[in-house]
Image 1 (cartoon, helix red, strand yellow):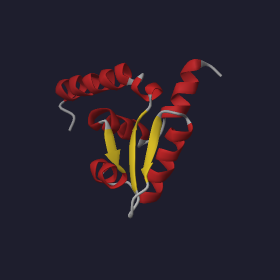
Image 2 (cartoon, helix red, strand yellow; image 1 turned 90 degrees about the horizontal axis):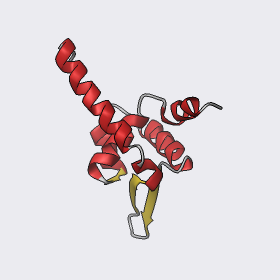
Image 3 (tube, one colour; image 1 turned 60 degrees about the vertical axis):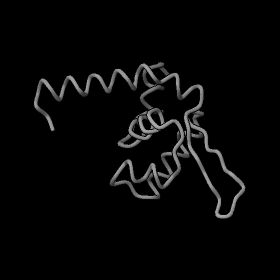
Image 4 (cartoon, rainbow, N blue to C red; image 1 turned 90 degrees about the vertical axis):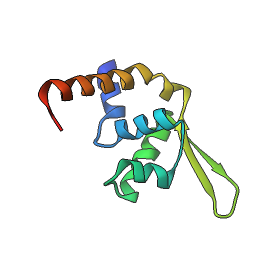
Length: 103
């Protein structure tokens, strides 16, 4: 597959880039906090998206053996390599909003 297609396949979808942006900004996030930050996402959808990103080695899940169990999500080294893409998309979105008055 072409490299662009590979990237699109891994990062496509309504939620994945928003999840990655939250992890990039916050560094470490627990499931419920991430769900609150994202807004209108179901538990099932968030779980599926996190598992896909974890399977692709973009994020890591850390489980702490406590009661109740504590689970945190963060970017892997590969996930952090998306930094220039995430920052560029943020800048582009700001510029687009300013130029088009898009809300």
